[in-house]
Structure formats: C-alpha cells, structure tokens
Length: 215
Image (cartoon, rainbow, N blue to C red; front, top):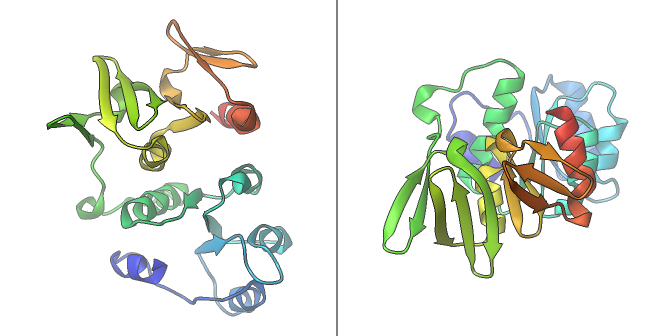
C-alpha cells in the first residue's frame, strides 16, 4: 500500500522494502536513505527499539494502528505519527511534514487544499482550519466550533483527528480536539480558548504538555 502511495508522487522513489528490523539495518548500510516509513510491531525487534539502535537514522515516519506509542515516538524526534488505515490523504500530509523538515517545496499540483469540506445536513460547507477553535464529540456527531459559530457533522472524532493533525490541531481529550493556534492559556487540567475551558484527559495529559512545550 505504501509503495502504491509513493508511486503517485514523482519526488519520491522506493529504495527498498524490508519485512523486519534486521533486513532494514542491512538496507540502511547499503544505501543512503532520506526517509523511512517504520512500523512499530515487527518480528523480533519493535520499530521503536530498532530506531533507538540507529546512530544516524534517516527521517522517520512511524506507521501503526496503535496510538499509545505516540509519545515515545515523539521523544525520538520522528517526522510524523501516521495512524492506520493509511489513506493517500493521510500519507500525503505525512510526506508534507517531511518536506518541511528538509526545506523542500511540495509541487503545487500535488498540494492538498488548505480548506476542509464538512457535510452538515444537506449542505457541504467549506471551512478554513484557521477559523476552527475546537471540536467536540457528541455521540455520533462532531460539533465544530468556529469563529463564525458551530457546525454539526455526522462523523467520528478520530476521523477528524486524522484529517486535522497535520494542520496544528491536537486531541486533548476523548471528546475534544483543539486548534493550538487559538489556545490562550492552560492549567494542569484544562486549556482555555478565549473564555472557553476545555478539559485535558488524563491519558492525553503528558503528550499535551510535551506538545505545548515544543510550540
């Protein structure tokens, strides 16, 4: 699947594919690799342990279905944490993050649009992500709070997280995603966006403060 995604981008070339960390180590010795897509759950040696073993690793995008490894991945200075299932849209956002780290410009024809399109009732509404304050999960719906007022859409907040994670948004609670650009204050238990206080979930707290510290 990843090789098919790579084939759609002229500026990427697959240098090799490896079924485990041992083969990957051999491949890194043979060729100079710029970017490595690294799974976490692999035979014998996990992706995280393999990455810790490398003295001069290439840029790394972690690919996994397990969110709980995100914090450890960020400690290793990865480029992007790419959750499965990996659609081309998510894949491209991860590659964009890599290109920014090496100061390259994404070819304009490939650039994903800045605006997002949200289906609300019978309408599809265009929203600039910069206008979003935060998102709130309400059972089968997500309430998108914008500077112009709320927009309701039938969706899972995890899907919204995948779409917005590369645009400066962070999930801080099982029910809330915030636009980090609009955070005005924070405490040990919540973030503030204007006068709105948004709780920080216990399982998200460490990653939240680590991310804010890098901002």
